[in-house]
Image (cartoon, rainbow, N blue to C red; front, side, top):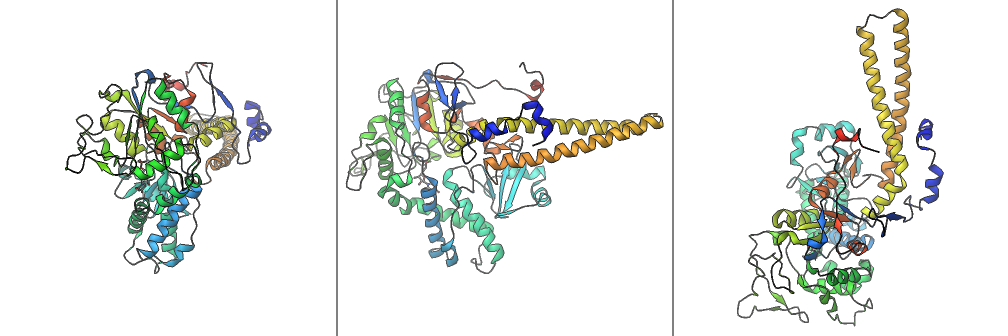
Length: 521
Ligand code: U5P
């Protein structure tokens, strides 16, 4: 830390060390809510991008996987990873060596972009400027990075089909495996099937992951022991009850099929005395007015999606009304319109709040196509917010250093310009030159400290990718999407129960850069 800054903010280093937990994350602290009264633990707040008055919301809908059900990545994503490797080796002809590979579930993060053709993994800011780039696990040099992605014209194309967005927690294992395969192909070119270039490898990995999700590889294992793969959350039922008692209808829309949904929801809402002999009693259904399984989101949200809905017979899992070929009548005149059981009348679109974890499949589509209000669940946020809190003074210091560095740069330019053109005597020239030398030396000192402290701060969030919501000083691409598409965002769905069911969520005031210098204190 640059000693000269200690006088500005005081040396709080020891205080922070005392407060921080072993992984650098400070122990939970109480955060005072601005309205006074209730206090919300830091990391559990609901953040608001766009005003939302819960009094106007008639129905609250939920996604299940990674929204109501938080999977434990160590076990669940590792299971997906291992299943995928087996499929690559036994079904797609990849070498046996892959069977010995292991998965670091902490390495990849959401918001990354895979460059399928080049085998690169990128983190970019909201302007799609690539700030961090790896080829497999090798960091790309600044020159390589700028040479490949520096041209602003390329930036519009960071999308499918050449790029893949890691925007769900389900994708972390496949991103990691892709990076492993890229490294493996580079050092063992003959060992990967001949047809497989980087893009083909990505396609194979994607197909293998998807197949694990669909063919029962994963679900049968989770079904046998949900506690091993899903975090228990005893606050979900009180949250659902609270919403329902306050007059909101509740519904579930999940891509998972009925049998699996039933197991997961029974685990989350049930008595938690699961053993294989205990039959599900379907009690969890009482917490929802409507449950839609196998919904095929994001297509489900499209107005022109007229897919038939069938009623599920809970005990057998059979579909009703299919024997004479007549499916259950559609709810409303297009499938996603929600019918409230109580009133039997469709809600207005803006009276629905949908809570999901997938920015594209859950949030963007439901908002853009149907105009629903949205809440994004970002489990990573809890740790990020706690870290932001414990690093607040270091981050303030970084901003001060950055400002000082920029001001010195400006001063140096100005003085050099002055030296060139003004009619100065020898003494004045000497003084100006000396002044420039002094400033340059101070600038170098500040620059070095800034770079060093910035790297340290970045690594506290994530050793490779840094802060989820930031890329350097700019919002990350992920944060930008959250800001644009999620009316609310929070770390856990059950945080809803920490606020009044009639809460009026309001965003903080917007500020343009020109307003910052003249902000009232
Ligand atoms: N899923 C797939 N393929 C994938 C990833 C997830 O089929 O590559 C499945 C999950 O197993 C889960 C469902 O059943 O999609 C979650 O979708 P959603 O309801 O959270 O959107």
